Every structure is written in structure tokens, then in C-alpha cells.
Amino acid sequence: MSLLQRLLVFGVVAMAVGLVARVASHDYGDALTKSILFFEGQRSGKLPLTQRMTWRKDSALRDGFEIGVDLVGGYYDAGDNVKFNFPMAFSITMLAWSVLEFGQSMGSDLQHALEAIQWGTDYFLKATSIPGFVFAQVGDPNGDHNCWERPEDMDTPRTPYAVSKKFPGSEVSAEIAAALAASSMVFRSINREYSARLLKRARMVFEFADTYRGSYNDSLGPWVCPFYCDYSGYEDELLWGATWLFRATKAPYYWNYVLDNINNLEKSSSYAEFGWDAKHAGINILVSKLIKSQTPSVINADKFVCSLLPNSPTASVSYTPVAL
Ligand SMILES: *[C@@H]1O[C@H](CO)[C@@H](O)[C@H](O)[C@H]1NC(C)=O
Image 1 (tube, rainbow, N blue to C red):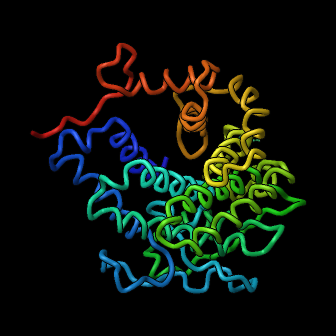
Image 2: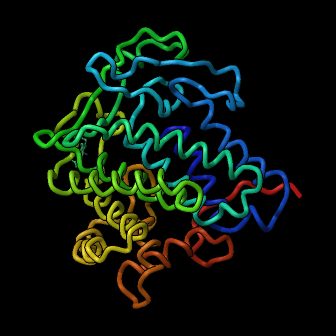
């Protein structure tokens, strides 16, 4: 799990249990502020005037140009300079979800969180601009990892990798669809035109992911594995994407898709797992907000929440002590 992912999961869990609001003080609030600021340190491309982390400068200004596609922007993964779109998209989905649930409690960080989301969605619009292709990654991870240097100086290959109808990648495509759909909800009341653009693209990308099924493991194996190999299969991302598309569109098509496929997921799932690869707990939580009957999803969502709540008899996570 990269640093980005760890910070994000921490932020979301902290918010999910309401600690940010309740204990008021500096620890968790400061962690939230810094976890959002962290995204500015990871920015790739031409940095805006509003950039707060000013020791970072423009970098990777020609990503994709070698094949005539503009792939400038997005985020670097961690300490390396690869743009891994699969975990990057999950980070954006989670940021969007966090803003949808807790944006009103984020104070002055809300604006920065919105900018962090748009930095991702602007890039994903580029990564999905050619119908029938979804860019999954920029940068050869082997070359990159063999040469540690600042992104501002890098001279390692910035190879773009895409999935296509013939070489599919349903996990990376469906996760990008989820990110675009969730973000379209965030921007709906702020920028209608942009929100509509995100949602339209989310529908197209989801259709591509679902129609041309396969794992990018098989299509792009040596470049995505073992870095962000898809260990948990792509079915969870398809369901996760459909759930977000249902929330964003309310179209029965997506809800039926969820109902038709969710039972396949339950067989293979760990209720407590949630991260860039396995979306099971997140799907269960979203679905449990939409149905009231005690389906396996709802039961697993309850079990997941009870594993997080500090005073629950089945609590299984520990928290950083709060300074009072
Ligand atoms: C992807 O590759 C990893 C490692 O070889 C394997 O564990 C996993 O099952 C593969 N996933 C899919 C969806 O094929």
C-alpha cells in the first residue's frame, strides 16, 4: 500500500467514525489538513498559481506526447514518479466520497479537497478521451524504480500504457468510471457543465469496462505487476462503478446491474477489506444505504462498521491516541 493510500484510508476512517467533529482538536484536524495538502506534493504536470507546496515545480509536461495524446497532469504514486491510474482513481473516488459525506465539516479544507479531486478528474478526462482506450499508467515502473530522482529532473521513460477492446482492463477502467461518477456528484452544485461532462464520461468508460471484460494483469502484466497487480479480480470494481453510477444517475440500469451481480461478490469477499484493490466493504456500505432488508451486503456492512467503532465488542482496529 502506498503512502498515498495509507493516508487516505486513515483520513476516511477517522472521518467515518466522527472523530474529526467530536474531539475537535489539533490531532485529527491537522491530520486531515495535511492529508489533503499531501496531494499537492504528488501533483504531476503544470502547477497552478494556487500551489501551496511551492518547493514542487512543473514536471512531466510531455506525458503522452510521444504517441500524440495529452496525458499531462494527475498524481505521482508515492516516492516514485509513475502515474498508476488504478490506485490513483481509487484515491479520487475516496476523496469524492469523503467530500460528499463530510464536505460541510471540512472548513477551509473543503476548497482544497475540491481542487485535489479536480486535479485527478481533469487527468482522467484526458486518460479516457479516445473511445475504446483507457490509459492505465504513465511511466515504465522498472526504469523509474531503478533511478530515484525528483520528478522535476527525471529522464526515465514516460511510456504510456493503455487497455483496449482487445487488451482489456476492467478493474482500472471501472475504477476510473467510479471516480468520475462520484466526482460528478461533488461538482453538481458547483459547476453543472463540468459535472455533466464527468458523468457522461463515467457512463462511457463503465460500458467499455463491462463490455470488454478482463484484467489488466493479463493485458499489461509486466508493467502493472507486481506494482499494482489486480489481486482481487475486476468484479468488485465493476460493481463499485455501477453503484456509483447508480448514485449519480439514479438510472435503474445500474441498480439492476448491482442486484444481478452482488451475490457473486459476496462469495469471494472479506467483509473487512477495503483498499485500492478490494472494494468489497465500500460496496456493502453504499448498498446498505439503499436497501433496508438484511441481505448479505447489509449484514457485512454492519460487521465492517462494528469492526471500526472503538466501543464495539468486535472492534478490531486501533486508533492513534488523541492529544486533549
Ligand atoms: C493478477 O496477478 C496476481 C499475481 O500473479 C494474481 O494473484 C491475481 O489473481 C491476478 N488477478 C487476476 C484478476 O487475474
